[in-house]
Amino acid sequence: MLVMVLRLLLCCLLSQGLHAQEANITHAQRTADAYTHPVPSLEASALNTFQAGRTLFSQVWTTPGSEDSQFSGLGPLYNRFSCVACHPGNGRGFAPDGPHQSMKTMLVRLSVTDAQNNHVPHPIYGDQLNEFGVPGVAGEGIADIDYIPVLVTFADGETVTLRRPNIRFSALAYGPLAPVQTSARIAPAVFGLGLLDSISDEEILQQAQRSKPAGISGRPNRVWDIAQQKTVLGKFGWKANVPNLRQQIASAFHGDLGITSSLFPQENCSAQQAACLAQTNATPELTMQQLDQIQFYLSALDVPPPLPHSAETQRGASLFKQAQCIECHTDQLKAHQQPSLALRKQRQLSPYTDLLLHDMGEGLADHRPDFAANGSEWRTPPLWGIGLAKTVHANAGFLHDGRARNLTEAILWHGGEANTARERFRHLSKEERALLLKFLESL
Ligand code: HEC
Ligand code: HEC
Image (cartoon, rainbow, N blue to C red; front, top):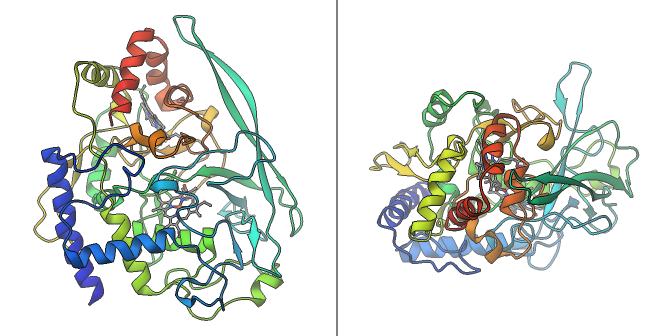
């Protein structure tokens, strides 16, 4: 019943959100809370659900048996006490500036290759390094990042020093980690996800088949859907490694906070982690209602309205096209009608992503396959709202591991299928580069 009501509400609010975008209603200010607004004109009951979901997202969760049992279930192993700790202001995270600074808003995925050449979670440490444990359970260890400088020169002679990250592990509490494949990832922003969740498989496949300039391809990831028990197209995560918003939320509760749910009923401990196993709880710690509420909240977070076009941003937008950026960061995605979203017509979105995987070259490769994605493929991240990233959090980082401290660095790391695009950017004049950045900052 609740799910039905939520679906109905979701349908109405999604279509309203689209209306707002189409009419360019600037209800949200371009301020530090730009990623926290619901789509306009939510009814009172929907606003209540939205607020309940917001509480769950910012809630500090406590260990099982704590007084406030509604928000307990943290651990035995975990990374942070709350969702918002890694997604500050609902925005993106950042990488530490050097070694011995903790990873405040990011995590490290882990895997190994087994005898059959399958990529599976590490036998002891699982698929994510959990730095902390509840009392009596040792945290798994610490990941530090240090950097190697990489000098890049624009065609006009100006130089930029990029930083190439290198991960090191220490204080490993459960024995050796190597041999292991690792992937450090910062938290992405979490608004506009209801719209992306509603994009149909056909639309993603059409994006993959659309004709593109030489050198650019793009393909969907194919990942495991726990609820449906089958392989489906991937949408969320830096490698499109998660099929839908609901599973993404449940897996974050499980992997990042150690909180079980109907989708992830087992605590996140391996067979060799005895103290962790001894603390397991039989019932799912997150209730179905809580999962519904947080899903509604994240679905209803509106995309901040872009700045109105100026002569400068218009020139920047044409340079964005000329440099082939738009081939992957597409502004032409259709949200199709879905049975759960009754009465919705086909609508145009401008997320600046095709939701496809692209080979981004050796410079960005993590060499860690994730379902069908190989070690150098990444999902095109949406660029909507990216102009507000630093307003929402001054340290906001770019690219999967936050190595880029600003948009220029992010573009200069592009390689592989985006080689031509990067080269075209590198050959722009200083004035043209500034215009292209102005356009990105207007999103
Ligand atoms: C330790 C930091 C951390 C914490 C805590 C955290 N996240 Fe995340 N979140 C991430 C990272 C990193 C990713 C990207 C994961 C990947 O690529 O595999 C992510 C991805 C997501 C996404 C998908 C966004 C997209 O565009 O693909 C959602 C939704 C999300 N998290 C929700 C949550 C919720 C809900 C919680 C709390 C239960 C939470 N996160 C807690 C780091 C974190
Ligand atoms: C072949 C597809 C492709 C092309 C062409 C392309 N990009 Fe990207 N872009 C990506 C992918 C994939 C990533 C994520 C890479 C990563 O995280 O390692 C990305 C990341 C970014 C980011 C960082 C986003 C974030 O959330 O951190 C920015 C900014 C960006 N691209 C801008 C551009 C601009 C400007 C151009 C044109 C000069 C361009 N891109 C061309 C695929 C592409």
